[in-house]
Image 1 (cartoon, helix red, strand yellow):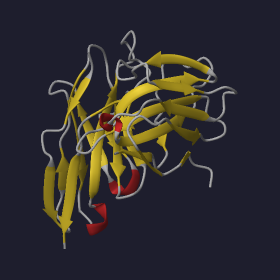
Image 2 (tube, chains in turn brown, blue):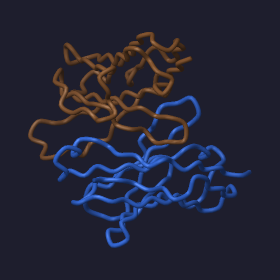
Image 3 (cartoon, each protein chain N blue to C red):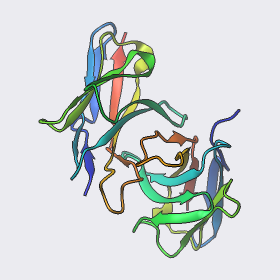
Image 4 (cartoon, chains in turn brown, purple):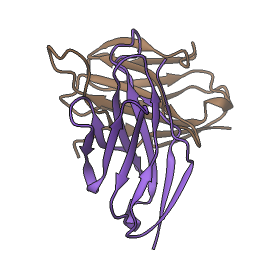
Length: 119
Length: 117
């Protein structure tokens, strides 16, 4: 399968624990995004990477959240000291931004998501 | 700031009838507009996009959407609905002129489409 892969698909944890999600994008894609989706809402942007550089972070990304993409391929999203309000589906997406492209016209390709439940 | 509104949480349509899922947007510049579909336990799947050019764009599974600048709308349509079209549909916008949001997609809250056999 050559799509975006996320794991684990489901994570149940107790409040205060740390969790980490991994995303493997489509191999030739240089941009990687993290979104959060709660019930009844559309996906909300968290952060994105161009290769290994984290270029933008949403105000939703509190200090307890950290994302990395160390080699410009897979990415991890860590949530420290989880709270019940962190319960959500965490979505990863990737796209290819071509050199010389004036602006990003490409669609995002999404993984199936990692569902977090904080008890 | 850019935003998207999907005024209907739920749309029901009989199989074989035409369907419309509504979307309006707000951006400061010229928008890039997208439709995605989400089936149960599946990731978001891209359906179609409008970047520039012809206001009527065609996408996957027989869907199309019409960009209307004066009404700031990008409604999703299909001439004849199938039961298998039942899913959650999201409209999304990107504003390439926006200083910090030019590279992000902003999503609406979604519309659940149910096609009744």
